Image (tube, rainbow, N blue to C red):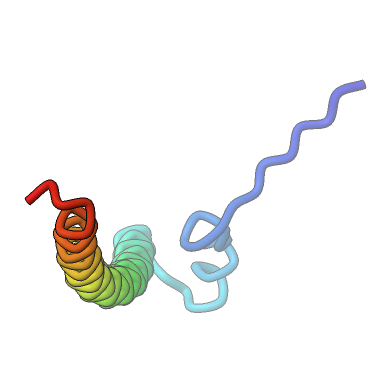
Length: 99
């Protein structure tokens, strides 16, 4: 035995036959109600997408600033290490009288 489930959500889950009976709607009015519901659903979806996009943009900006800070710190550390290496090698060669 096979059982198929079909989950509906949003506008497609609403039963418009009951709505038409309760409100005594004509077929064109029923179609208008469906379109109105679909538009409100789409507007809600667009607003949630825009909210998620703004959150992603804020997160991207924060990560970008952290990467820039880390890069600058890395450059400073490399410069300090290379300067100390040069000073150390200069002293080493002076002590060995190679310079």
